[in-house]
Amino acid sequence: MNQLVAGDISMSQATTFWNQTRNGAMHNIMRFEQGRSRYETNAPECGIGDLDSADVQATPRDRDCIRAAMAGDRVLSAAGTAITTWKQHVHHMEMLRDGQMTADQAAQMWQMSWRAGQRELVDYSRATMQTLYLQCS
Image: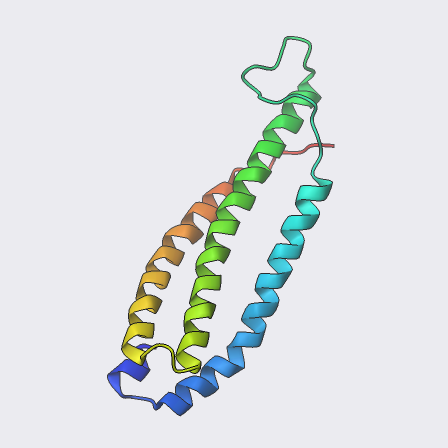
C-alpha cells in the first residue's frame, strides 16, 4: 500500500500482489473460524464456573482444568480480535480492487490496521504464553 501511494508501483501491480495473497488470507481466516468452532465445541467443561468461587471440594485437577479453560478462552478472544482486524483489512482491499476506495484511503486504512494488528499480536502472544504449562485432562 505504501508503494502504491508513493507511486512506486501501479494500481495494476498492487492488484497483482493482492491477488497473490488474498486467497491465502481468506483461507487462513476460514481455518481460524473452523478452529474456533472446534474449540468451542470440544473445550472441556470443568463443571465449576469460577476459580475464585470454587468451593473447598474442588480437587487440584478441577482447579487446573478451570485455569486451563480460562486461559484458552483468553487466547481465543485475543486471536479473534486480531482476526477481526485482518478481515477488515481484507474487506478494504476488496473495496480498493473493486474501485470503491482510493489508494490513499486504502493506505490510510492499512496503516490503522497495521498498528492495531501489532498491538493485538502482542496481546495474543501474552495470552498464549500464559497457557504453556496449563492442562485440563
